[in-house]
Length: 388
Image 1 (cartoon, rainbow, N blue to C red):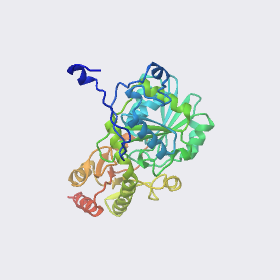
Image 2 (tube, rainbow, N blue to C red; image 1 turned 120 degrees about the vertical axis):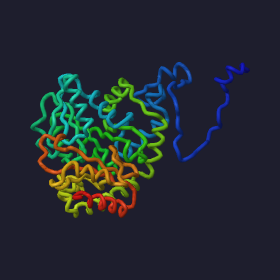
Image 3 (spheres, rainbow, N blue to C red; image 1 turned 135 degrees about the vertical axis):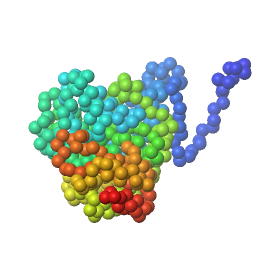
Image 4 (cartoon, rainbow, N blue to C red; image 1 turned 135 degrees about the horizontal axis):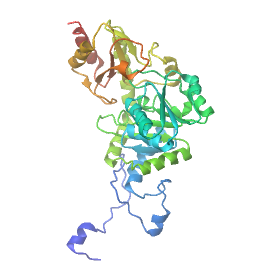
């Protein structure tokens, strides 16, 4: 059938030959998804993922990434979100309603804390906070209206490692779901489902991407009914990710274990060096025996990654530690982590935690993929200027 040049610009009968194969997953861009016929349109079910219905509900690119992430975590189902925080919000809005109660650890990722405050102030959902090392005693905090417990392993910034199996057992004994922020381990060093967790959240922004250039989050589950509840929130909130970003995350996955192990080895070396410095009062690294919850890390984890914190000796003021941070040459000052570049970030931890007893300024490090001798030399030079 012949068309005018204008129509030919839009309608073309060419179809490329089948049989093309390559290692990368193809990038499928689509808002509108085409159906073979009306019957196909009416039979497709976006929740089942047995057909393509609309760009937000998935393309071959995003379906492939979801399947790979679920396999890494040992789960069955996966949903993608535009960021880690978006994935957290999706859990809360899927599982909580007015009158419900949610428990969060005191060391929770601060945007998750802010979301809890919003739920309390505007949605009539009580958000309460618990000692991250509470273990089985969390049973005493569970109320009849408690529907969800958030966990982090380890906690953001201060690095306490919770007793996940004890928390999960206490929760499940009372019919409460447990969600885990497993970003620190990338799903490689901790298998959340093996310890009783119901939902595993990841900020794919970190190790999965590895390039410090992608924002994305994921939720992985094993239970179909739970996945369907999350999927409804995913649809209702209009959660979607760019296929180009999905491709970038997939491109990072084959090297993730190698990068994670390299971050781990370098971080332990740098942390051990800092532990021997008189300027440092404590090193908060889960693999070190004096880190709170180390016994849980030793039992449940197989690695550590590149993120840890230190507490400076109380004799140093915030102005002095700020000068230390500013004088580092190989460490960028920035949030997030998991990329090739080392990062540093000072925190006012006493203002973040109600029952924080330790004195001294807390500084968090992400150890990247630089040569550790160069990083240590940079740290040593910066520390030498503290008393100047």
